[in-house]
Image (tube, rainbow, N blue to C red; front, side, top):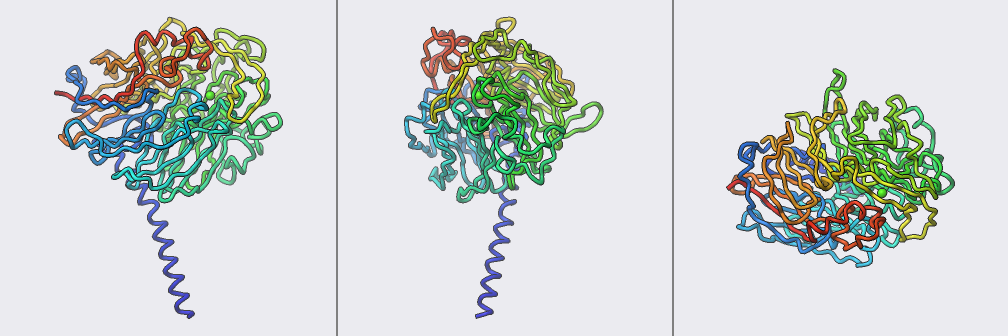
Length: 597
Ligand code: CA
């Protein structure tokens, strides 16, 4: 009997050890795959979100010959954000609502459907999505495809068959909780955020086990330290961040429960530091006078330990936000020399108009410079990390503050930038938009918009609504800019072939020189582009470039949601800046794949 128990215990212990050993093996798989230039296995190419490809078959001298290889209609008509993945000669992507996941077989002519998965979601969920019905992509690991449905369900599908392996509910759309972001897999966990910043949702980030979906941890953006994950591992850079429970004390009363920092943007990861990075969005409501205080930790950059969710450091870019400058834009992780010293940096182009270069190990701000004509703040005080505000542009309840730059949509929204290690420059798709903004008193009802502001967006100085810019993040300097009629509301892709790809809202897909911005090639897809380009090697050994084209999102909602052009405050003020987009493109959902003849 005793012997039996003992062998039983050994068997259990061996099983436990095997389980522990299995976890890093999964991460290793993804770590290897992302280094393969022929495949594209993470939304941003790699954990660092560089969106840089080593491929060079398509290059600056031959890109002018690029032709459509094949196309695919997604069967949807809302905005298409994000990029497809390619692995094992299969292309995977997810559409806008109802979030159809397609696997296309690249080994066959014309890339026919290998499988598709169409989830069943309550149609009412569409009513609580803030800014069109978008989705930013799928993730791969361990033979599974992971994605988030708009109704806040995370799903794992068998990558070979499309069969559901597991699904878990992360939130309740009846309370305005939705998900639009792409998941990120780290080791044995799938990390997801939550959307709903315009519905009084309290932001959180969740880790679920990739094998069976069970929740491993969940940490909040606001509230007591224990719920935020501020504990023994917390080493903030700035002294003022050391006080206890700032996620409660920097708010008035219970306001921290009503929307603080939703987490709907991109996620990056540094395997050596074992930290993952993301940003949190606006405090609820948009009316600042209803929530005196810094409103921590909305509008912040986070560094967390993926194993337990604990915070290493956090940095709040926009204390007491009065402009909806969500801090969710991507954190790109590259090593750079700053003031003669090599640094592990994190580069972030914020909605508030400043481009930040931080030390990603410590959270110290090294460089913070405007990448457009900012006027709400004169700069960032590097000693404290706080913005030096212009009191004239701080918005108030019952008063229309005009000519604020940037607009709530930021000089950049979620459309992701790329980094090229050859030029050491970032290629940043930007908006040139300013706004007027008036705070209005609003009371909270679950599942009802909790915005509390009337906003009108207008084109910025010069009248063009956007530009692709090249940025030196070691000095905080713009190297070149290509002005665009519309916001450059697509991601960018940079390659070893010395080409930068991006798309425009009026449907042009372009290739430009990384050193000068000179246009090398363009093709009108006829469908407005807000997705992100990617590249891969097909089974025939040729390089392909793919882009999802389907206008929508916040900027293109005037087209995708048929919003009335005569209401300038519709779509949280976006209609005023984009009402004439209906003259250039119509609703569509298309995938375009290009190659050399
Ligand atoms: Ca927001």
